[in-house]
Image 1 (cartoon, rainbow over the protein chains, first blue to last red):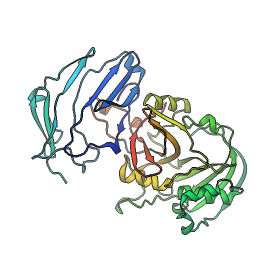
Image 2: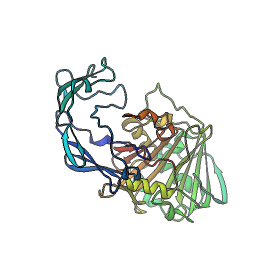
Image 3: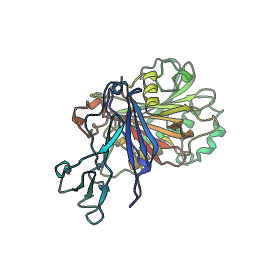
Length: 130
Length: 259
């Protein structure tokens, strides 16, 4: 989260289990400047920052991310991690992400794979899982 | 930390707490809560709660009155309290779960101070002070600012635990948990602070936790658009919250930020 202050939260103790499916959503309430994050429909984290009373998100990304390079990215070549139903909201109305192949990429193709599937879906995986 | 202290007594003592004593079940500490009658008693209790005696070369205890503390949610409660301030110097961090290849980057460069309530022996906080160039490590926010930021992120310290309740793991165990499960390496932190409080997040039932803050870390990479523009001083500290009963690291965040 970046507003007047940069904020990050690592939810160490709630990593999803293998082969599980979850929904993630974050919404901005500009009346309070609060980003509300939910996990499987349950409020998980909120950030209030007055900066967001007069600003809105300008870009949207769906990312797989690891903390240490030695960590495994979710998914393997034979059992990829699927991102599906990617949408973003404008003025409270959700619409499909409209992803195209060129939108999907990996920071390091030798380490992590990324594959476009559709306008709302893509796959990622670790090339060399431990 | 911008604290002003009225020093009334000073006493230095060699480390005398035996290993066997340090292994005493911390639940027994409740029996010692009301027995901190002198400096050696303060050092004894502090060492049992923290195990800092195991990694330091000397310790001393001072009786003082708290003034101008900056602990969020608790500063007003701490104000004007008479405390035993136990100081550990010559610290070289040795963690059970550390890879032998990695050693304390700042050995002998941190002094730890433990505050115990002078009447009850209750642990108030643990603070470390780096003896070197602070670099991009900025001063912590004021109590009001930190509290406001934590509330904005859905966190709340409801207070210290009941005076008869003690953490089942020591401060050093919590630091070990951060190393093995958490975010940021204590071995690379210029300062390591600890707080044992009742903590809740997003309205959850308060639970006893160790809040372990690492300051002066190598900056953590910031991802996302313009992430590289985030100043280093906003990325070189992290606060890990560890369950003080199970030793499980719950989450980590860089909130609160310096003012």
